[in-house]
Image 1 (cartoon, rainbow, N blue to C red):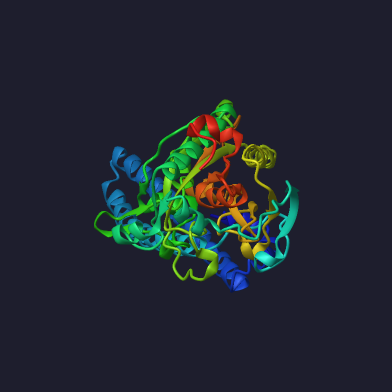
Image 2: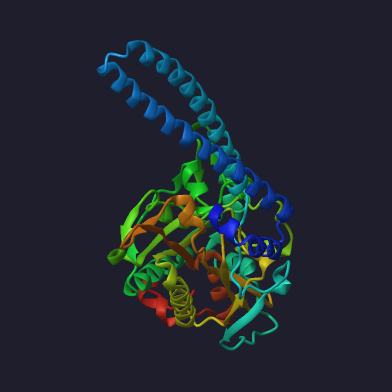
Length: 422
């Protein structure tokens, strides 16, 4: 959440940032926020004056009673009673202004970093890095949704029977490949200094608001209505919320956590060829890396996290590219996001497998996540990234490594699978 003080001091920059994210009614929202904030501050000032006067009158009454001036003291008591009524009215008005302010602030997306390009869609994103050779497959090469049937490793039909579309059943070497990838990603994260955690996969609304999924993505999340809990769309939510309402010491930073969870997304409105097979699922597995950093270090940390994902994809021997997202293609909470896309040789297109983002102070302000400085507490910066999301990684591994004898696995995975081919 943006801070009112920042908006007040950087009004034009905030409006320009909101426009870069194509947020409708940017000027109107900012003017509403500033007008409500002005009323809030004026009411707070008036309330402080009334409370100070009430306290002074109470002291005066005490002194008058000690001096035996009972009548004058009783007269002041009547004034004090009126002041208390006035303070209650002002306090209620202040609460209303604060609630009105919060209701508007919670809907504002984060302001994009200065390096974020203009644009509305994926087509406007900037390629900043590319690695690897595109595999040249035979004319008989199959897309992964045909390969999984041929080798009987993932069963979509049974998943539909059990749950519905987008809930596959992994079996045999398909299940072992999933487990191998999860363990490989976790082991690599631990080697890089991340503390492994296993968080809950159901979270309360406060957690969703803390990381910015709510209210923005309410319609995309599965909800257990009876208990007012949400199935997580990513491990970012529970892992980052470990530190909600927390004051860290500077010597604890940066905080580095990694965790595996299943992830759940309704993906409402998704259809067509782009969602076939593993390309888009309602339930999928992912290893997430999360860092909490000092504001002055957060972009150095972002580069470190990008380097970590690069190394994973190189070890998996997959051709990939890194994309800097434009303003219109970024998430609600992000200040700067790099997407990683692997090339699917059978589908002849790039598939997103990771997003690595710096949220700057946006999430930390919502979470009340701070650190203790020399003089006072300060808001921290939060970052996260997929390292990695499994479905499209699996799709690319199957498609790019197919031969007439089967599918050859990357060497890095063989110690985890116990076999080198399917």
